[in-house]
Image (cartoon, rainbow, N blue to C red; front, side, top):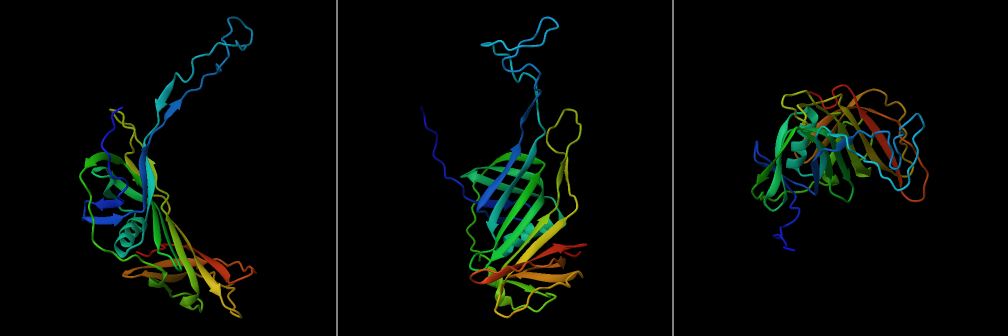
Length: 283
């Protein structure tokens, strides 16, 4: 059997043709999804069709025809990608998540073979920064079109990865030393939905992507030092906190939920969850 050309594997570079921006990815999995939908008839695997009013019975050794009526499903172009946060990549995808704008991007799976995804919108955005590690971002994407492309994507510009000491919180409604923050995370869910319409000729791809109600949630993990009281019970009034990572910054209009205190051997860590309200990220 002949063996094809050996090609380089995952190179982890994503490209925005509109402005020439590159993003280095640690994983990528956006794909068209289409499945055959079958009509399962009442005749089972070994059932026979009765010739009179008798009930159908099993005829051992006879196999009936199966899965003979089917149709293709609609095609959804969905999936996710993740990357270590840099100022460029963080600002790029956060802006798409915040405003829900359309965008196109190219991605090479190996060497010079890749895809172009068109009319995309961010469905989910997940930012996480933890002490002792780099900040990471995961993004869920929905697109309306996909096409094959060729050409090598090459990106060699150096970028500094964001870590927790660079990520800061301000405008908190309670007194807390920044050095006691163990982790900061927040998620954006745009509840995006592909819209399908009747066309002539038929088209199984979505006509558009509609955004639903934006939901913003997050949490702050905090080390508690001995004798430090941190059980907020009066945080039911919305407040604007600010998250900063290098040159990127965002305000979040939030309501805090009460934290859960737990006794344990070793350092005590408490999680303080928050929920975005109104226009969570402002105008």
